[in-house]
Length: 440
Image (cartoon, rainbow, N blue to C red):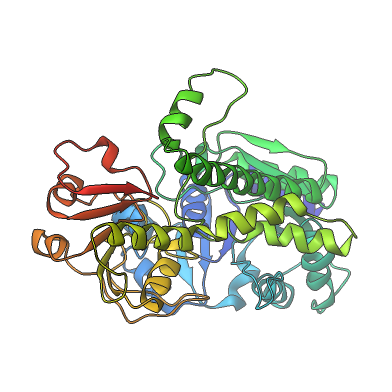
């Protein structure tokens, strides 16, 4: 029997074992979805702490809650491990590792390459291997597959290789992993067919595309689209503010049009591992092809200016009260990049804190999901989240709202803070606000 037919039979009978490399914000919910689809899942991660916590039924990702970890730990069909030699147990291996930027804003594929090497050295013939990490078009075939072949003891062994972009929206109440349509594109028809067959065990909708490159480009398009449109409303925020017009009210008004308009909201800057990073992957690849990316790069410039704009608004607000930014007590609410998650990667709050501190302000922050300032790619601090009580608010010269967590007592913030710079339009929906509020 061919490897392809063997895999079909294993998947259809739910007897396939799936390895998931990387048990973070993408890999863990994916592993859970596959497990819920009836498959046996072995989760691989280099972080022993994560492995130990998962084995003990404890969660290290707050937005996922304890129920998922407890369910997986109690199951005979899930096992976390840091032993990558066990990759030969898997009939399919899904790779969910970071794709960060290097020091010169160039793609850093070291985690992808390391994963491919592990699969090549410890895997076996007939496996389905799917890359889920966001990257530039051509990575799956030109980097991932090449590494699988070059590092293998048998470069000619048969493998089925595909790309299926992760589309997680951490903290979302509208979508769960299995409800988000799954794009699949392989290096050949057999790879596409097998990857789609696997994902159909656990996802409500699977969409096959013509190649791995199409799937890679689709994911990049999704994120570039968001980056560019956020840049547009951020620029409109600056323009309309100069005209003394509320951009949030304008956007809500425009959103009443039932066609031809999609609502995007301004903010303090981009955050997370996808939107601030992925456009640079496409820009880098475009330069290799001799193509400019002026629109994408301009969007990046606008979005990257937002943290400094927020600090300027803080300074203006303080000056109106007869105070200087230097030595002012500024409390930032929110270190996570979006509401109700503990992920602070690329968060604009980190840059806002850094700029404030650089300009002489006495800074502190509160985030119910991020108890201490984590290690970041570009920012370091020893700050820890402070308690958000009436005294902390009253003693601050200015409170800056960066992340609109539901767990924050916003009415208390509105009552007790003397001055608020609001980057999320939170205070617009709060009654009894006594603070002076400036939008930024």
